[in-house]
Length: 286
Image (cartoon, rainbow, N blue to C red; front, top):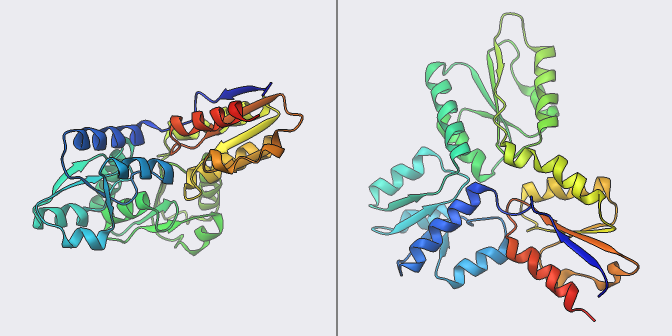
């Protein structure tokens, strides 16, 4: 096809995911049996690739049944109970928790220990693996808010310490801060900590700029990826001719009519090889 295709250099795994996958590959290459607690990355194709190399994905219920094995903890992190269970069951932990997440867990734990009466508030997605790990640092007392509307249920007469899941939107975080500042009692203390990962936050303006440069955007991402949802929405807002696909099989070649340049980009959970496969499928299409 006579079309120009560019793969976005800023798309693909963040360093936390890259490290987790590298650790898994090293263990598997040494011929060792390795379990992973939860999907190593929110991308079905990459999970399948690692499964074919021998990685076994398990959930928390299955973890309780295991003894004397090796288990990888992915980049999202885990609450203290997981480590405690591993100790009891003689499970060797390979800890691939992202350093940004680890630092955040440690800050929340310290804050909770110093002032257990304060409200520790986490801006994040309820039930998300990273958020469960963060809430676990507070004996499950932290309050999770998903949007500005949720903030209304806080007690504005008591101290509030606000943190954010590392992959959330900076704009929304600032809207939450503004709302709390307007409503907090003069007698209560409010402190916010911007704990959003810059590697992820910077992708918003970068991917928007990339999307404006092309006639058509193919955004390659697993539909389970919350980061993927946010980034695709950003592409769509600047380029209505944007499509989210999980793999090359989902490309509709009718989209490519009268298109001169195609941009291929993805989430922090999208492997480079998958974007390359999509490019090759277009180039090979007659």
